[in-house]
Length: 401
Image (cartoon, rainbow, N blue to C red):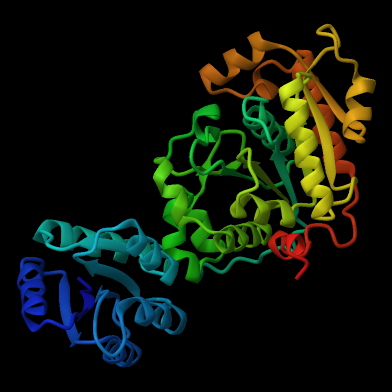
């Protein structure tokens, strides 16, 4: 059996000895080196190419975060596991951003240490195996479509999920669905998808992220749509940055014809990153005054960001004039034409959500399903606009940089 080669990096000799003692119970693991600071660690790793590095954070000469950044860039096949007595969120976030695959709080048990190493090694082995498979990738012309609103409860997730499934079924092309409502995303529930990994897990490998690594983190829906779920806990959202989102979407674009993004109802940096990269933004509204007010404010922001009216499409959900507001008044207020209408059908939509089966598959005869199909056909048949999805960073736009 091939042994897992491990390097231990800690400025305290006693700690290194304790770790070696804990690892002595596992015959599959072999300690091939030690270092007492980040500079030594980088040298040893570049020379010995270990499978796993156990890296302390606070060390003299060079700290573990800086060393991890260098190692993940120069020796990406080596998995770094951070060790620290500091269990605060900020340390965890820095470790993940640097490229660490996992994080261990000191003190830890032998089982915790060994299981973490085995998990990191297995994940890296799977990635290498995928890379060895000779595949001819076609030149994918990808579209990024974000479903957005400045008001919660307007049906973004329902629309995003059903549009994704409808695109996969009607175009027979590859479709990825990203749940970017990082705190309270419901895409996995909407599609009855079994969640194994989420977007917060993928950032552990963000520095080595490629098409093969991405595939390990996507969940397959029976429609053929591949789903990247939101984090399982709201607090994990803060670990994810705009640069992570950019890397994820760019990687998906290499292999998927359509990347559908279900965003949260705000202009957080992660949402702005997705909106900037989008070829089309489906801006969802309903015909009630609080929503119209928020949508108007959102469109004003998008105008400041210089998003074109061709890029931003107004989708009126639960469309009906029976409650006193006319479509024409709505358009005059927003100074935007309604691009698509989705009728009210609470029974179909709620039943679909509760059962986890998209209504574009189970209730194709309904008006709401036909409305989604109409949206799908328009998205599929539109020619890609020149320069779409390549907007200047919104933060730079806002501040005129």
